[in-house]
Length: 161
Image 1 (spheres, rainbow, N blue to C red):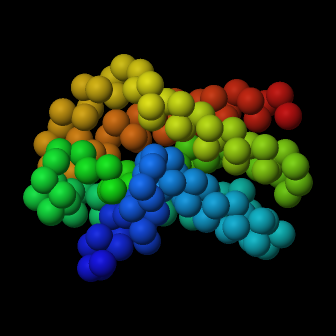
Image 2: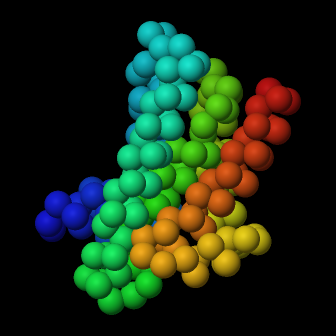
């Protein structure tokens, strides 16, 4: 696997034979959980969110830069193996969501993952319209919209915890 494929498939998660989008989303969720529960004692809420925002922006930049190559390489407008868009959206999903270093933090991360997958699959408006954007933007923006919807769900649920 070349470096572009490695990044676009999030280190091979997108090559999972069934539901590669779910596999990529789950891989990103696991990264978030590991980072959070490793860093929570040493990091402020602001710094945690800077990490999430930076990771999402880096994934977005890479997705847009490598999107045209992915379309040519895989021969389809939105290749299933490309999951970097899901990764960017999962990091967006958890942005500014209050987390706790206990079961509530785990529950919020699980809710974020589940909400994102639901919105990514059902694609409420304007997700379908965003898919029509050219280059890597179409691959990316529908997932970012699903991530924004999932973030709203997480913000609401976190207020009840």
